Image (cartoon, rainbow, N blue to C red; front, side):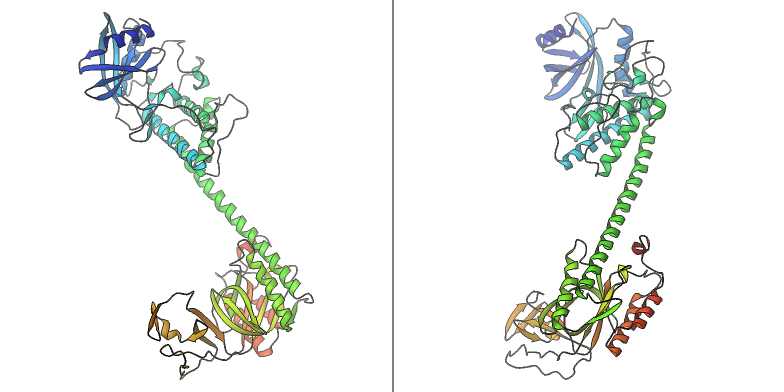
Length: 535
């Protein structure tokens, strides 16, 4: 009976009777060369029933149909392998047919991702299909089974568990060492779909192997990723290879599509090992690129900083100084502009003469010689009367400047209980003073330590925007500003060398060539890797 006649008979009969009860016909849902699949219902539950359409006369094909069930029944179940429930014989119009009752799956794999513009969705779907199929093939191979017919029509979708499932083992090769079977492949018998099968499956000189299944897997993935299989020559690569997963999948596809079986990846464990090696190489490449990008950005900043110093102090040869208030302001504006460069915000480092270092984030002019220096995110008021500059046009990492400050008066605290009264201060600091600025008044930091502050009977919630912490240099100070991380900190403390240089600047009120030489002699050739690697 041919397939159209069989389907007509199944529709007419409506019910088939099996050893596990009666099943009611709903519709045909699949068709192959030797079989077709129909949807049946038993007690409200759906099942896929696969009919061997050649009857029971062709012994070799009948044996292979039986092996499909019996062979799979002998290995452990797997979530990515189709579930087979029952093998039976039914009679339709006085003709006997073998059937396999299977779990009903939503559909087979259809369509491709060739038009998918959403990278996240592309990565997610490619990864799921690849991992699920690789797991399924690995499970088969571990139990001596070569599928030999991996193609989209044999990849089902398990909506309940959100998985792709491999099915149709009608021409699978079962290793007798693992699985008892009936069928033997006849010499010269054509097997598998030419579009997806390995080259050796189209001829007879080389038997199908585990790598043949990997070839078919690669063709399925190639088509799903790009819209077409690879037919030799230039292969269309998988898209979005900035993703580690997709870059690795693309390289697995390339290795598994080799025409010569000996040049392919030979097994699923070998694929996994290859993927691990590629993953390590990808991570190393990402790390290398990130390091190179960081180094390039740092050097770009060095040249920008060097240019700012030369522009702000055009007469400088090696050391120079600026005292004019307008030129001091202009110099700091040129320097601060470099902080706006991509990744430049954290690139300037400041050291105080008495120790302590933070990033320098710029200086805002208030009036005359007064500035507010952003030292590590904290505002420091300073009376800047001189800028000392060191400039080396050939080695920009050596460029730095020193800010010399005079003294400012200590803060006058306002009493929180009565804002018309100045709070008495029994002791004044020697170098820097601290205050909290609120509504133009200066409060004692000790009065604002808690999350809430009471001012003239009203409780205010403390936050940095409203209650602004300020420091003020009330004694002469020298502040060293240079590119961050020039010296190798594992070898030398650059802070100590900078502090020594600053003490010299405070004492002499200038930057001497001798102090600069002493500073760089202390560092010697022990520079940070990002400098020495390009220097």
